[in-house]
Image (tube, rainbow, N blue to C red; front, side):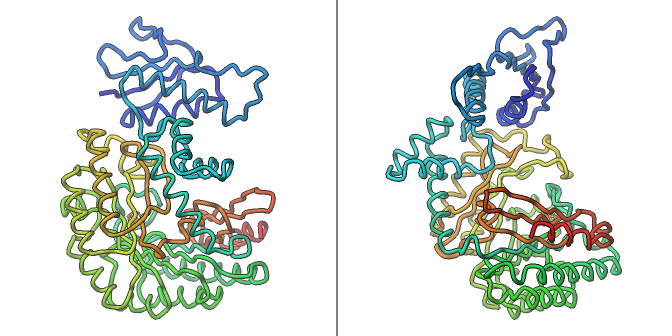
Amino acid sequence: MIKKVIIILNDDEFYDDAQLLARSFFARASVERVKEERKESGFVPQKTVEISSDGETVYLRLDGLVPSVGSMSLTRGQIHDIFKRAMYKDISASTGITLPWGFLTGVKPAKRITEILKKNPNIDEETARRKFEAAYMVRPDKSRLAYEVAKNEEKILTALHKERDFSIYLGIPFCPSVCSYCSFGSLPVNSVSEADIESYIDALCYEIKEVARMTRDKYSGLGAVYIGGGTPITLGEPHLERVLDTFISEFGVENALEFTVEAGRPDAFTKAKLKLLKEKGVTRISVNPQSMNEATLKRIGRNHTTEDVRDAFKLARDLGFDNINTDIILALPGEGPKEVAETAEEIRALAPESLTVHSLAIKRAAAMDNKSLPADLTAEDMEKMTAETVRLADELEMQPYYMYRQQNMAGNLENVGYAKEGRECLYNIVIMEEVQDIIALGCGASSKFIFDDGRIERAVNVKSLKDYIERTDEMIERKRRLL
Ligand code: SF4
């Protein structure tokens, strides 16, 4: 197995492309860069791609692939695509590996097909997909997915008053326990004192009031509202009620097009809290098992059982929630196609309105590192697991409506949101498509402002609980400057 990739590249302009693509081919390897050819045990790579005799190190000698474009009038993006295409072809020819998304390294593949459709408004699906496949060496099944997402997104976006409205995100950074793959910086609730939770609620309610005042005359209406984190319902009822009441009255949330609470972890569900969400007008919640395999749940540090998932679902249904999302993750440690098939079977019985399928992505901030990616999982296993989730979405009569990719994703795949018609999460689309301002409140929350000239500016709240509590005015000021 390849353990190390050494990129030999002097040109700084193309290093990001090189390392992203190298990581896509060799997900479990560490990546190192040298600017000169290096002799290791007398070995000097001669070709673009050379693998050491023990099969553990790949040398990528890439300066020869840097395009010399001379007077050709190409955009920067096109020049980078020339480099990536050449690199992709050489690695692929040397290793026999192909990637589902070809050399596309961006986070929003559907955006590329939307661009093709905008440039060629009269082309049919087949032609648009062929153009997309040829442009980035994308596999046909992935071009179909990108096309479906692009078309569904377009349909949903027409329902939004894009420019005049705004959306809101509110973050509660506590969870019952921390999952081993978590990179959100969520805090296990029992590690935080009651006094600190109280102070956080005070600071958050203060930020809500101040920011609501600043936005009152600026927008004509409210698009999507999303409370996430963390696990918002980790808060005790009095705190949850205080936050909801302040938030709803200050922003007029009852007029929003959608009000989601990522209830999330089944171990935080209680009848009283769910009742509270229902009474406060929440229209959409999520119940996130990630896996319906008991051993996996323990392995990844989630304190709940599969029975808790079923109970949480039943509770939500009994209280009248008719728009429930379910998150699952592919390639969790110890899982393969068999475990994913079992999870799919259980989700089928729960029959949620939407389903979000993630492929495990290892982030620096997580306790897990990329060596935790299941070693014996083959590309074929990843395909089988994906096919299982596509079948599940199909049986539940859902369509893919949003998608994004991350670095270090298992199998180089994608995260896909599926939903029954009319049950899509608007907030997911707003955040992906950057079509209206998002005001984000709470610890670590990131606001996004879209300007008429296409400029996008962010105002990011600090991640540390202590800093957020002490510097709430500064967080408010960061938004005031951009409003
Ligand atoms: S439930 Fe989500 S936010 Fe909480 S620890 Fe797990 S991954 Fe992180």
